[in-house]
Amino acid sequence: MAKISVEIPDELLADLDEHVGDDKKFVNRSDAIRASIRKALDMLDEIDARHGRLEPDE
Image (cartoon, rainbow, N blue to C red; front, side, top):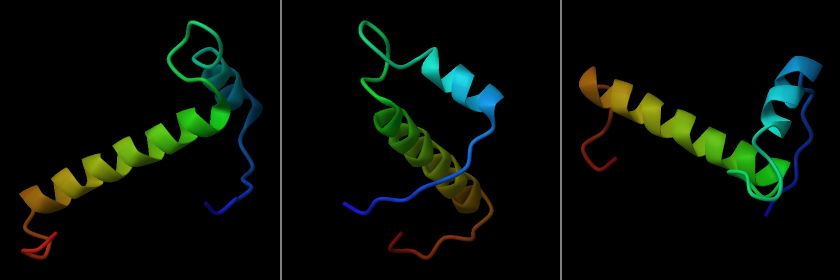
């Protein structure tokens, strides 16, 4: 798995951290960020499909 580094505004990181940890939705920041990216990409695919911008095999 590739590693990347990103700059994130402190306010966004604080919001993210409210959902990370024991008894919360995500076990760590990486898990939260991966899930968020997947969800955003799925939403973009749905938008592209509605506008006919996806290839038939996608």
